[in-house]
Image (tube, rainbow, N blue to C red; front, side):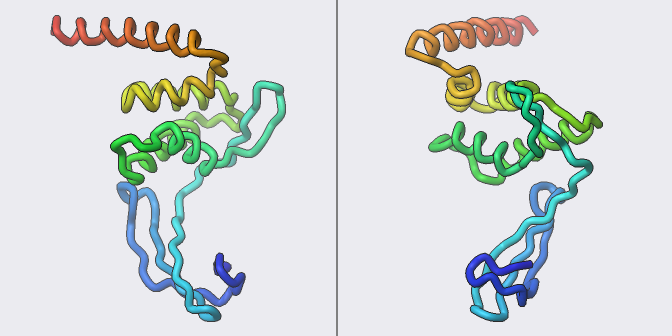
Amino acid sequence: MRCPFCGSEETAVRDSRPAEDNTVVRRRRSCGECGARFTTFERVQLREITVVKRDGKRVPFIREKLLRSVQIALRKRPFESEQIDQLVSGIVRRLESKGDAEVHSAEIGGMIMEALANLDPVAYVRYASVYQDFRDANDFAHFIEDFSQDHAGDAANKLDD
């Protein structure tokens, strides 16, 4: 593993432990050249996934991009990074278990929307504003109104149970 500070390939693992419900191995490393310490994470990747964008362009799936978009939606919300990693890992597992080599970006966006709707309404609206390309305040108002109506029905159904 190359040192992110000096670029040396003389690094050593100092500690390894499971993380994220035993789906990831967290390794503490140190550089033999500059002495810096850093952490790496090792995940199982079942298959290579290609994302088909709206314009038809095909790009490799990058977990970090998915993580970054969820982190932005959940910025300053009461969630720990471990919870966010678990949410992202769940979405990645769903994508990998589908068995499809190609996945449309809209499907990934829908999975994120579904996960955020169940987790945090503020993050859900934040993500939707970018994903659905809101143009003005009316777009927010309509979206929130629809969301409120959908979830008011959910609350009524729970009361009936």
